[in-house]
Image (tube, rainbow, N blue to C red):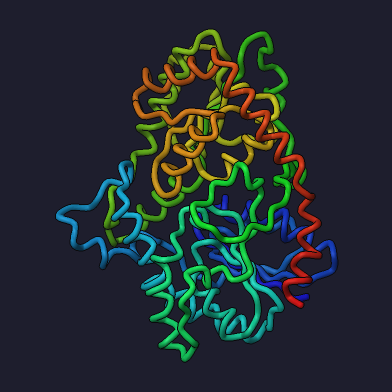
Length: 402
């Protein structure tokens, strides 16, 4: 079987695909990953072919024509339903052509039997229809917040342009369903698409181990881990190199990190590990119970963590569910706000509404003192452990591909 996989966005999108692609490669199937040059290293240790032919994907720039009606750039820290609708239209509208122009010739040459696509990649929906092959989105926050009814009109416009039949069913964007790593009872998807669900793995990065300093962390007090993910730092780095301003206002990652450090300093009855994702940060004067690092193998550390302070990306949410770790969610943009709300609905964490150091610390103390979120997190973990291993996906995809 020949499998074409597309990866856009941040490294977390690629890491969500790795377990699935490894299983396919180990079963003897040929896997071609088409991505952008900054994401190609995510796949360097795996037996897959990588073509970094895609251009940098920016959903905010694609939605720029729709956002022009706003008197000033909207603030992504407080997204509205209208703003989300406009971003969806941009992803399924103007964002399609740059990807389609590159991907379609590659797909025709590769002749895939099935396409596994990044959730934001709408061009592969059309390519699959042109080639007559199935396509499924891989786990991503965008697939969760996607409203198929909003996606349908711009997709049908592309179908008409490409000579494809228009569709009446909004779920025609996912006719074969989607891949997920959480059970139905704990789903974060806001649409009714079918899920092929497999167990989230803790072994994402090959040969990953915790650094030696982790073995010296005190174990007689709660261990709190805080991280802001990779999506926002990578987006800000890209925009710093771009001459075009964003049509939206994004949160200040340095400000968020400073607030997290302030909260960590106040949690003096805990040990706090803060991951900066490589962002420069002044750590002078921090008390000894706070340990700052650029990077740590997150799925491994979470196995021993009592509370995870997170930006709320879908990868981080799943990894915490897999280890039964309660969550304090400080969302920044995209699906993270919806994820924070869903975490509260499910009962294994809280949405941090007060973004100050005091507000973050207050939520952390309440979660550490309350046994209920820990119990719900354990229930989510047990439910995840009932899912089949990702190797089951190989047979499922073979069946879908016919």
